[in-house]
Amino acid sequence: MRKFVSAALIATMMGSTGCQSTRMAPVAQEELSEPCPAELQAQVKVFASGAPRTIPPELAVDTGLTNAVVGRRLLVSVSPSGAARGVRIISSALAATTFGGTFEGWAAIERDGTGRALDVSPGRLRIAPFLSGSTLQPQSISLDLLVVPGAMPVDEMAISAPQLWSQDRQPISGAGLQISLTQLRHFSVYDAVEATIKLEFVALGSRSASDRWECSIENHITLVDRAAVTPPLWDLRKSADRGRSEYWLALFDGRTGPFRAIFTSPADATGFARWLRQTHSTRAGAYQLGMFRPEYSDGARRTVPVDHSVIDSFQPASSDDLNNLVVGRLGEP
Image 1: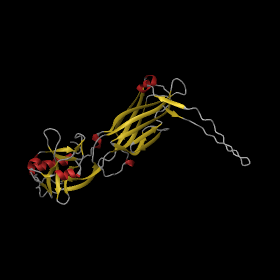
Image 2 (image 1 turned 135 degrees about the horizontal axis):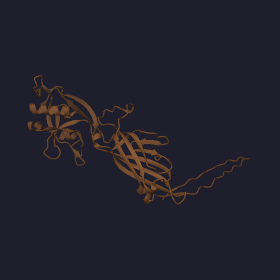
Image 3 (image 1 turned 180 degrees about the horizontal axis):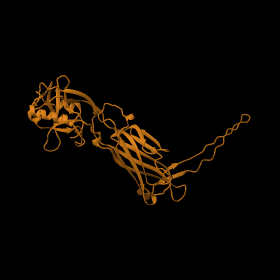
Image 4 (image 1 turned 120 degrees about the vertical axis):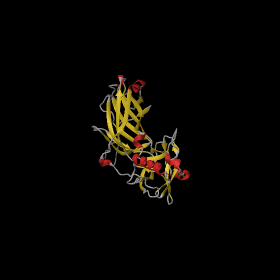
């Protein structure tokens, strides 16, 4: 049982011929806060959901990351039922704690937020007071947030071939193909951002004015799903009859070593695969084509592109390898 102690200290300085006296006011009686009754706890529900939100232009920051910051609108609703409706509320606060990502540091209450204090730190958001009015009633609040998915950034090269076919619709030769590379940065792990929504409030008990009940209700939601944090990048991997693809396409540069083939659109990846099936070429301009085996984690729900996995498992591609390439989304097995 938590004890709340309120005390008043009044010091009066009385000066007279070098003599001073200090008088203290009596300490107020302790106010005890009891655990929330099970009936009240069961009759109060907290519902929450996250939806996409366009980032305001004034807050958009060019970080160089393809999946850096995600805008979200968080809707939180409190629904009391039965005897819980009308219970007097002394104080309240709502906290949102994230897992798999952080808050960017900005949040705004969509509608009138007068009288509410909003605090945002990387891993936690807090609103106090949260409940409006002096009694517990159904109510909702909507907040706009900026969420940063977790994991470390990784630098990679996206490839493009401006011309794969000649004017007479013949594929350009492997030796004559011009490949351009664009450096990009994205997060290395693509997974959902979860959040725990926790409402805490102190209610006035029913027996006397000194009774106080301290209640806490939680809900767990997916604030940002995997699809929203997966970067808009595509690759080519060897088709598999069942299960996940085991080998992905890579390019080998004699100066810098191998790097996986990444495309900024599925059309570019599809065109490159079609060109490979037409030419059976194991080279693309100055680069040798090969296959590598990526690392997987968390039951193949996501991939972690680590440089050494490309280097350690790279092997020259055969014509059969290049004839069986399919387009895949980066981060999907």
